[in-house]
Image (cartoon, rainbow, N blue to C red; front, side):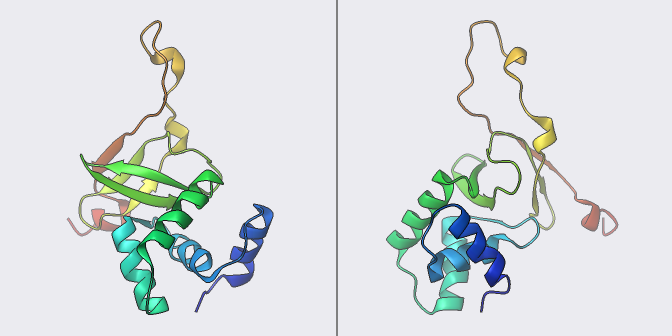
Length: 142
């Protein structure tokens, strides 16, 4: 059951995408506050909701949602990629804060890397910065 069905359907239609159950489910999962998931984590949650999810179909839908800038990818660590709802910032080229206790991942679009901060002659293609620490919710638990 998709909680935000009307909202999600309008997002898909406004971006000229067909409304499909898997797209509805992906966006519903990622609408949760600070939710960022790997493809495997997404597949596990979708399987609970839909009973069966084809891995290739999931991959293609993630790719489509990224091309439409509805979600963006975040590189965490050396070989882990997570996906997060893009919201008002349509690029993943901004820092993210990850809580060491609950793994909450929060976008920090106000901390953009500016081209003028690069060495002369350098051109930025993308950036990936994860700031690690303890979020406000977990701070009182430490």
